Image 1 (spheres, rainbow, N blue to C red):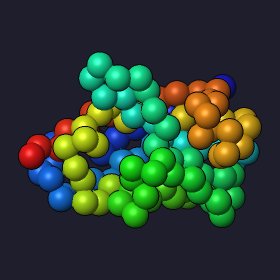
Image 2 (image 1 turned 30 degrees about the vertical axis):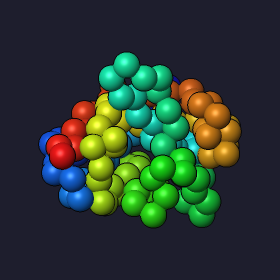
Image 3 (image 1 turned 45 degrees about the horizontal axis):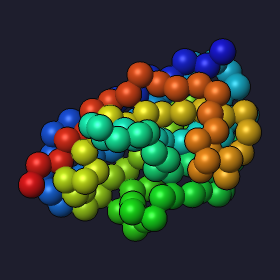
Amino acid sequence: QVQLVESGGGLVQTGGSLRLSCAASGRTFGSYAMGWFRQAPGKEREFVAAISRSGGISYYVDSVKGRLTISRDNAKNTVYLQMNSLKPEDTAVYYCAASKSTAQAMRLGESDYWGQGTQVTVSS
């Protein structure tokens, strides 16, 4: 069992930056691919980014490429999402996820564990 706790959300102006963190419990963090998803009001949850177990491979949805960066620190059991040049359309609840499968599979929504979510609001 893995428990995921997100932090770092908040209110920011267009063009601003935020860094989300997700702390995972347990001693097997390095055996999971990790990812971030988001859900805007009235919309379905969508894939944002995923990173492989070692951190060597990452994937992004096209709308965030060049602005958001996923990274992980296996020694700290933590995955991050650095968010730059934020836009109002980035407003959503952001969820951390862990998968026993691959980062590539997470692009299709594959995940075994989910965090409770953290709100990100970008004002125009």
